[in-house]
Image 1 (cartoon, rainbow, N blue to C red):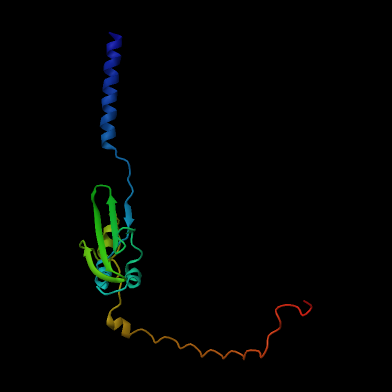
Image 2 (image 1 turned 60 degrees about the vertical axis):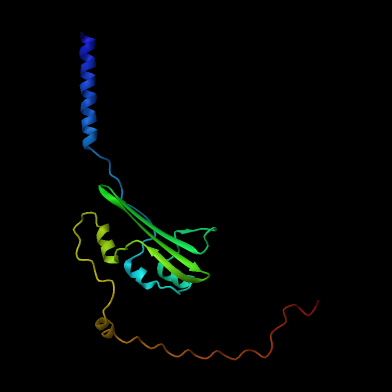
Length: 166
């Protein structure tokens, strides 16, 4: 009888621990991987641009292949606990050194992406990331740099590199 009471007690303790474990979930970090490409960056990419120009705007592609030398892939994933993961893909096709076409998922703006990184914290308004034309007009004129002094003339002859005793 005592043995059966002990088994019943073990079973109820085990059941209670399972219920507690199902209520408590471990913390999972937000995971951001890949190249984030904003709507503004995508708008700056046009067919006819060189590879160097595209790299200046978007950065180095996440995926390049020896077998597909004329294709660059930019992949971005964002995983957060309790929220469906986001995945965005951008594929660029080149003909030689020139951008031929772009295949892209809908991309968020920089402000939308910055707001999505907020994990429920109360933060102020996202600042404007670009100056307006009026703001640019109101900027002070850049200070003029002084003219550089001319270099002294080069010597007519130089000393020998090796000693004359040789």
